[in-house]
Every structure is written in structure tokens, then in C-alpha cells.
Image (cartoon, rainbow, N blue to C red; front, side, top):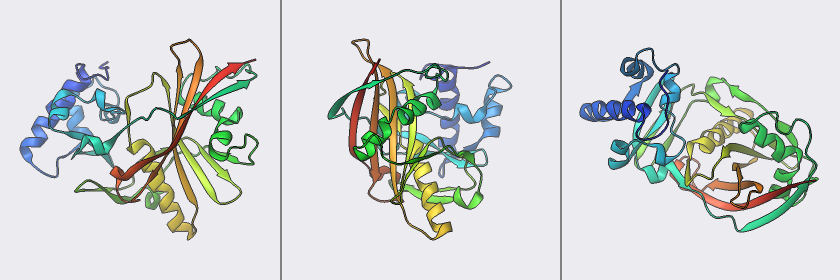
Length: 269
């Protein structure tokens, strides 16, 4: 089974091969999972996974040299888009460090992935403190996962001068917090190291989906996109960083701006 997410791995070589072929064809630089499967044969189980690159350092060299990255269009279709700096956002150094004491439970380590991070963030009232400066803020949690309402997963947006149209795109919302005053927070979580940057689409696409929900329900509510990272500090202590972002132009993925960020240093009792 083919693996590897770095620029020098098989994944990188396949993406480079696809880009060189698509580049010769010219705009709109689109390809599909059938092409990916043709390149990989039966050695890669999930063609969609091969096209997912969650941080720019994992882009193969040929894409970096040509300043392009990959967006997803739905229905197993993808597109190379110009402007890596628009598709990836460098993580800021948090301006605030918060010591956070909590009592670890028997299930805190049950899920070692992203869901486990978000469970801790909610259950230990870290998200509530970060968002509302009140650990006891009366919020509700929703875990919608993958939803397939076509009209909510179909829209257009810009990346620089490039127009991107998605149709019935699979969009995951792992975590939604709703407060009583009509605003919601959505989060993308990572566990491991602190990346230099992250793919903006990971929070932009859920944000756009919720804008479509607003249109369908003919209502308005504030949407607060979050990026969350759980990691071990150099001093050996466990920490969780929360970043809040906003989009100055809802239809431009590159218009992301940093709102605030904090590092919660965990101290289990």
C-alpha cells in the first residue's frame, strides 16, 4: 500500500506527475480520482486522500516551484490553483499563555485523534474560556460529521484571481459550539507537532457551508472559525493552542485574518 505524505515520498511523486501532465493541458488545471487511480493502480486505497495536503511543507517540490496547490471540487474532481500563500496560512505565536488545571478522566486518552482533542477542549471548558472568557458559558455542542445536503455543499469562491466552483463537495464539520445569543464556533483540530502553516480550506469550507445554511434558513448568526492544535511542549508539558480567524471577504478564501490565539498549558490534578 502506497503511503507517505512528504515531498519526497510516493504521494509527492504521483502529485508531481499529475501536475506536469495537467500543466501541459493548460487551464483550468482540473483532474479527477480516475486519473489518480491510473497513476497509482491498486496501490493507493483512497485516491481522495492522496490529493489532501494539509500543510504547505508537504507539497511536492514541483508544485512549490510553480506556486500551485490543490482544491477539491466535489464528485472526485480536483483543481490546481495558483497562490500557495493564499491557500495556506502561517500560524501566529499566541499572545497569551494560560495555565489550565483539570482532573483527567479514564476516557481522556480514549481517542488519540482529532476528536479526542476537541473532546478535551469542550469537556474541560477550554473552548468556552477562549471564546467567551467564561469557562461556564452556556453553550451547546453539535457533532454533525459529514453531511451531504447538496445545496449547502455547492457554492463558488475565489482564490486570488481564480474562481473555484464546488458541487456536492464532502465537507466535514467535526465540532460546532452554539451559544444562546446566536453565534456558532467551528473547529479543525490537529494532534502532534505545531505546523508552520495549515490549509485554509480546512476551516473555510465549513464556514462557507454554514453561510449556505443561513441562506436556506433565512437567518443570520455569527460564525467563528477555530484551528486547534494539541502538542507536547519542549519542557514536556501538554498544551493546546486555539486560534480564531475571520474572513474579511466571505467569498475569498485568501482573505483570512487572525483574530486571537492562546496557548493553554494543561496541568492534570
